[in-house]
Image (cartoon, rainbow, N blue to C red; front, side):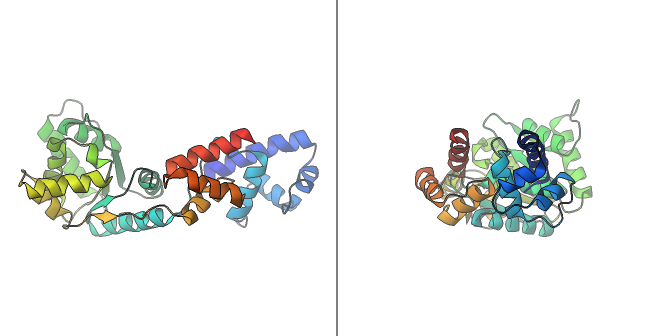
Length: 281
């Protein structure tokens, strides 16, 4: 459980203790939880408290109703490994997976946990200037008054001066051709200095392969620079859904099976169903 979620759990715990009258009274009503454990939580002595205990207490005191906890699925574990390899060895990768496979959440987690990670959430309306504006903003730099070539030069110089940087372009399939082809210029300027990961749905692979087939300008170069390979994520499994549910306070196996049948492999749908369950409790 993340630090902010532990804080939220302790705050909810304090409110429930006030309602129950004492810590001991609350502990007696919580199966498998001792008063000593609650005391450790309240005093921020968290080193020896297992994640499972945090989830149990959080579920009981209701602190998870508006807080979402990260869970390591097969795809998220693979993505973390891909991101790390790209960052450490300045590799360029293209990763595809269906919507709701956990790409964006895992990228945000990697960005939060590591230095020199620049995550860009791409959009249809971006042009080259907007792309560089977002990149510079991620690096904490101002673009005001700079021309497009000056913005490019500044971004490249900053990245070359940075230790093991990585740019993760989430939803890269949304980018217009002019911006997607700009990726070639960025790659050429940063080859060997910066990892770059393109993440998208399978539409990106189809788009690139179609462009290569009809010899569309720049598409052969893009395909070459990602190593002539698109890394495909796995479909979401029952084990993945179970991990996500348990990380967010859902322990009932029957309800977890119900969520799995209803989610169609979409982790975003799992999140909706978990929150709906908590609201209805």
